[in-house]
Structures are given as structure tokens and as C-alpha cells.
Length: 444
Image (cartoon, rainbow, N blue to C red):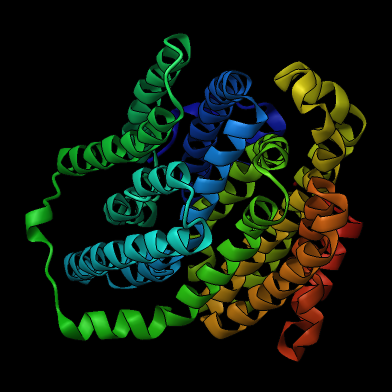
């Protein structure tokens, strides 16, 4: 079906997409994901700035520490099944009810287990810090709600992400208004943790609604032990990869909290917040093109690698487009957004924004590994990056604080996303493709 928006494109772009239904579908889906992230970027940043200014670095640091601890265990809750489920539904649409039902059940059980592990961990790390324990206990509930993101995977497999945007943005806007009200009412810290949990809970309700609105029924889902065994067999390396990935994504804030103080965590978290605004770019692009990349692999190897190179080139270009201006404007951006109390976040932001470049490429490289079903290789790549990140944080944080943590992130992101490709011979070609993208990035 032709997309009406094509007629509004400039002539040089219109020629490229006219008559190409799959490309139009991908671009339309990407547009919805970009719109979703742009809304969240704008509203979320505005609300987040209010919260950070209201709470101050110390309290904001406690909230960020609790969120980071929960995030580390989120990989257990989702079971690394995203790419596996999308791949299986694309390949076997006649079995999607069995796939979805089994995945939901597995994720629900894993979410409960992850919540228990999170609480045990916070009591071990902070045995006398009752406030942090309460924050983690409240925010950890999102690990259970995450089971409903199984519905999101079905929409992704159909390249129909606009329905997910409807559901999750409704919850996001409602809770954003609630967060502003909490600031105006000078609410205590724990209420902001509760707002985070409420957003995920309302989003789950919204996903159920739009799924039913598309003539689908949760009651049609089926659970089979054979499917569960097959999914877990395919995903266990991804579960480990996800755990390791979240460790090296969030270990900086956890180690800062343990080795420095809440104030330093809060300052560092403000830099992370700005740097992570752009993470939606590779995620939205790769989420939309992944189904077609899988199809290309099955039909034409040359086309498969050609599409991958284009994605690498594009994401490298976008990474540079963000990193270069931010390098020169970091001090101004931090001061305008967060005020004088967070001024020391500027050098941290410069280092973190360059790590985004390698994070972009890692997202695309991971899509390649998923298409090849090289889940153990993915685990190796991420493990190397996580190990380097932990070691560098241990060495640099005591002396340099948040700047040291940012430097550790930059180096480890490069290793996990690019450098480690040269440690494994079958990935030398991928490493060369990524190098080509870094040297000669292209928008199209």
C-alpha cells in the first residue's frame, strides 16, 4: 500500500522510494519511532531538568543510583528475547500465538526473579541505607511489568510501531504531568520513584488495549514447554549478554555511588541524561530495518552485506553529527539545562557523547550478529567491554570521580562496539566495515 507521505518528499528522495513498498513501510515505521523518541526527548528532558534542579545533585544521585541498580537486573527480566522473538514471528507467523504466550510467561517469571535479586543486592550493598532500599523496592516493580513488552515485539515484527507509540506515549505524557505536579508540590524523593513505576504500569495497560484494538487477543496465546525450551536455548547467551551489557552500561553510576558519593552520581547522571537523549537514533533505525535485514540474509548475501554497510555508514554519520557540536557546546548546554550546581558535568558530557558514536555502531553490529544467530559471539563482545569498563572504573573513579567514569565508558564502548571485532576472525570483515563507516560516514 502506498504511503501518502511520499508525495510530500523532495524530488530527489521521492525518486528513491516511489514504488518500493517495503522501503516505504520501513521509513514509515522509523518515522513513528523517531516521533516517539523526539517527544520523549523534548518532554523528558524538560521534566527531567525540573526534577534534577528541584532535587539537587545529592538526591538526584540517589534516584539515579537506584535506577541503575534496577537496570542491571532488567536483562534477566527480558531474557534477551527481543531479536529472537521478532525473527521467529517473521519466519513462522502461523505460530505467533504460541511464541507470544510462551515468551510472556517466561518473562513474567524472570521479572519476579529479577526483582528478588535486585532487593537482595541493594540490602547487601547498602545494608543500613533504608531510603535507597525503598527507592529500589519501588522502582524494581518495573521488572515485572516488562513482561507486557511482549506485545511490543509483535508490533515490531509487523513493522507497526505506531501502535506502541500510541500506548506508551499516553502513559508517558500522563506521568510527565504527574512529575511536574510533584515538583510544584515539593513532594519527597520516593514519589518520583513511584512515578517511574507508574509510567511502565500504565504503558503495559496501553499495550494490551492497542493489541486488542488490532483484533488480537491475549486469550489466544498458548504456552508450550517445547517452545520454552527452544526459546531459552536460543536466548541464554543473549541473557548473559544482556546482563553483561547492562553492567557495563550502568556500572559507572553504581561504582560512583559506592566509591564516591551521591552528589558525584547526580552530577554524572545529568551528563548521562543528555548523552542518552540520542540513543533513540540507532534503536529506531535498526528496529525498523531488522526484519528486512533478516529477509535479505536468506535471499542474497551480497544484498545483506550491502544493507549492513549502509546502516553502519548512516549511524556513524549521525554519531559524528551529534558528537562534534556537543564537544564545543557542552559547558553552555549543561549550564543552561541544569544550572551552576551541575557545572562540573561538562567534561563528563564531552567524553560520554563520543561514546555514543560507538554505541550507535554497536546497535547495528548486534543486529548483524542476531541475523547470523551468533549469540555467543555477541556475549564475547559485550563481556570484553564490560570487563574493561569495570577495571577502568576501579582505577579511574577514586582519582577522577565522574570524569574517570566517563572516560571508562568511552574506552569500553569503543572496545565492545568496534575494537573487539578484531579479536575474532569471523568478525574481521565486520570490523573492516565499521572502520570504513568511521572513516567515510554517509547519510545515504
